[in-house]
Amino acid sequence: MQATATAPARRPATKGGLGRAIRYLGNHRRTTLIAYGALFVATLAQLAVPQLLKNMIDAITNGSLYQIASGLPVLQRAALLLNTGKSMEQLQAESLAAEPLLINAVLLIVLFSVVRGLFAFVQAYMAENTSQGIAFDFRNEIFSKIQRLSFSYYDRTQTGQLMIRATDDVEKVRLFIAQGLIAAAQAFLLLFATLIILFLMNWRLTLVIVPILPFSVVLFMVFGRISQPLFAEVQKRLSTLNTYLQENVAGIKVVKAFTREEREQQRLDNAAMDLFNQFMKVSITFAILFPLINFIAQVGNAGLLYFGGQQIINGSLTLGDFQMFTQYLLLLFLPLGQLGFIISLLAQASASSDRIFEILDAEADVKNAPNARELPSLQGSVEFRDVTFSYFESSDPILKNVSFTVRPGETVALLGATGSGKTTIINLLPRFYDVKNGAVLIDDHDVREVTLDSLRSQIGIVLQETNLFSGTIRDNIAFGRSDATLDEVISAAKAAAAHDFIMSFPQGYETPVGERGTTLSGGQKQRIAIARALLLNPRLLILDDSTSSVDLQTEAQIQRALDHLMKGRTSFVIAQRITTVLNADQILVLDKGQVVASGKHADLLEHNHIYAEIYHSQLVGDAEVTEEA
Image 1 (cartoon, rainbow, N blue to C red):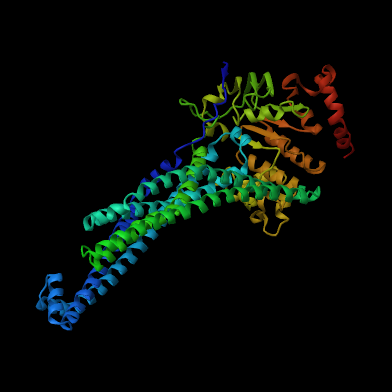
Image 2 (tube, rainbow, N blue to C red; image 1 turned 180 degrees about the horizontal axis):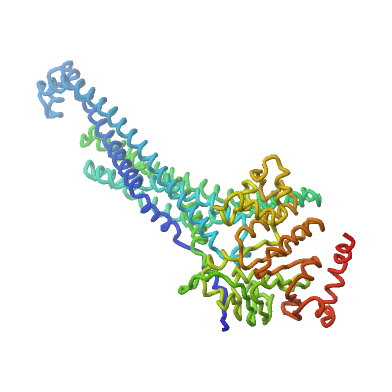
């Protein structure tokens, strides 16, 4: 069997992410409907207030006319009555009704204000609830996606980039949904409702204001198009800054050991300055926007004062009507005043949502085939059949036409210089990567044709770089089997020669492990990692230089335990110690990505010069130390 697997083409940059993010509202229909329903009621209450103010002003004006008319001479009174079209009896009736109308208008204004405040609270609470729910969905989806992506994705992506997208970018989208989207909905509702009311009230005066609206819409679109790439660049530079911080904190011991504090500070200063400069570009953009919005509003206000004043002079517009018109006009200008706020949130959320969906849309290079089947319980035979592999499409092959066969229960030692392909071979066994040409078979099953879970759950792995998680020692040993009993954990720890040092701690197996296991020595971390792998009771065991950080005495203890546990298991071991090589059933000697020799120690030492060179340069010193011990 031979197959070819090429890395998928790099996906184009995601666009239209904000629309996709908004569709997540469908997952929170109840809170969304409540939020926007409350917004609608609160807006209606807000729209009722100008009409009540008109009633107040008209009540005061009409009430005062009777008093004015009563004090005028007969001829002037007759002229006033003629102008108003009312009799003294009507003016008297209006004067008597003025105070009750005033009181009613005040009470109604208070009532509508209470209603508006109540529903505004419901709207804000439900909008926040909805946005937090969407942020929860995004973070879970991003984390789930990160768990499923192939190792090749992490080879190309910085940790800081992933962290920013799962935190800051998600927060930008959440803020837009919680505030910007609500503000936009309120703006459109106010805009159209107010325009309708204004046209019904005084269409001539409304036509003075309408021409400024297209300018506002064009302004909105132009600044939205300009600001989105600016905010996208902000997020990129923020990711770079976060990456420097993450790398520096993770490698603080190296930084201090090499006295590179000043250099690292300079790197951070440069990244911070790049971010500062980009923020200033954004600030300049909005510093231009807000005065333009204010200018447009003031032009409309000036036109209103002029033409409205003329209508009041000629008697076609009352003072109460003019006051109501100006109040509604304020509600019309309110969306224009919110343009800057909405544009800012929209541009940030648009850039951030595109970055989020770049992760969610990323394709895993290694994934289950459509017809993948469960891998039966392993017997342990392994075959590499003419395998060629490179980590990146354009790079030179790390393995070239590698072929070998391992029988169940054999221990295989991998030897070779750095870069010869040892680690690559053990990376292909659990299918961390897929071969470019050829095939890797376990029990005659091509690993690409079985499910990843059924394959990896039957392989115990101890990698060269030991990684422990925050929690207790017991939690870390039981990481692959959370249902394991304490006795099973202790048994695995004893097998890995870890039990004695664990019990030396006051809390024993409940001892907390610091971040990345910093509270433990290198040898202790490796023994816990070995115990973690052994607890799975795997049929296939991979040990990547698993005793490199322990002393000879500890290694001897581990090796004796591993010799017992390897019986009946197929084991692949990368080691720099002679003990593993001498006990191996098969030694594979790699050089420049090819298997140049295979066999047992004695035969290879006699017949293969590459193995003899490795033995004398890397292992013979260890053999002498072992004999002295």
